[in-house]
Image (cartoon, rainbow, N blue to C red; front, side, top):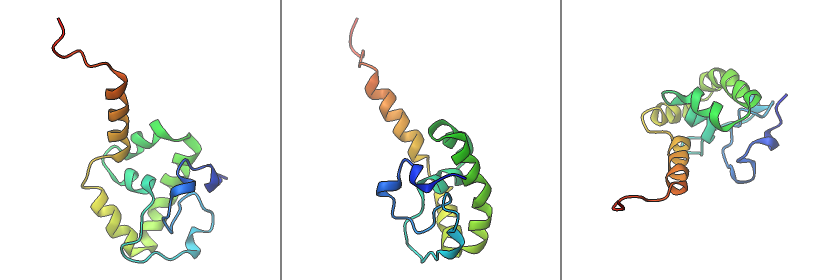
Length: 110
């Protein structure tokens, strides 16, 4: 079983529903509450591939496994993930910024 404390965002996440928590079904989500970054990323096109690049396999498997049940039981989550699916990937944008800052700017040099 995956421990939610192993999540890279554990210390700063305020989402009420955690797909890594075994008792997520006991938690209620209200409209406009924060949504787990990884649930939002999974909702986007290519989301599973993106998560595979950032998280351990067992975490991605767990998130992927419980997401349909979470969506079926939490209307606010379903609506939030629908909105998230229409925007770009925050994780991919983060990766692109890191890659860009790691490469020296060679523009204008001969």
